[in-house]
Image 1: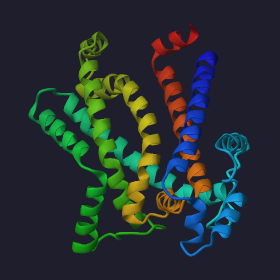
Image 2: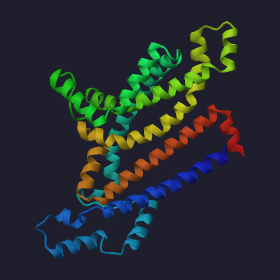
Image 3: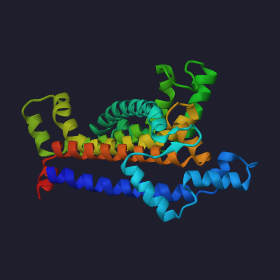
Image 4: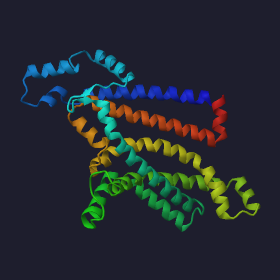
Length: 309
């Protein structure tokens, strides 16, 4: 297991290096100049060059990259020129709101997805199975930003039962969390349904039935547990995806998380904030994937055997 974890950590470090490098290249290839955007169109050429020198943008790209890698190792992304504060402090200040939204969406998706998946999988081919499959396929096809706008129109403007924007209360969390959870719910439901259908045909399930256990006992005590291995993997991967995908939903609902901060930072060429936020999200994704791999190894003895080789 130690070798298994060490190998996953090595892959994670390579992934972080790839993300860091990609972000460095992308933000510098983006049209526009950070110094020009910061000072505005009325700034003189001398003022722009002075700011470029202060930000280190006048140096060769190779030197900028090496300096940047050294700063990343120290978890120092410099200061946000817009806020005059360390970029990582600015990101960490907004990060809890994004985590709150992601966790709420994950809980909703897991509960709803497991219920729908089990109901559909225990009687494959039934009317309920076809209805759930059609419903979840439709959920996956819906663009989250469009769903968010529709929720605002219906629940905030028409019914006036929930706020359309802002944060700080449970009522503010409902609409963005449900919106963010919709494609995740569909994915969990479909994975659970497939796992239940496959497990129901296994010999140990027939053995459990022959012992006189009820269908509910067989389902909850044997089938569901053994169907969770692929679901755990999906959850680990998808939670990381939600952290990044929450940017759009946060913008739609004006949720005070990383979303609005990143959108603003990209528009203003605030490289430090963009890089800090992206690296933090990448780290979270890697940690969550590692946790999912470890849980899978605990649940599935075949993975443990493979890890020992």
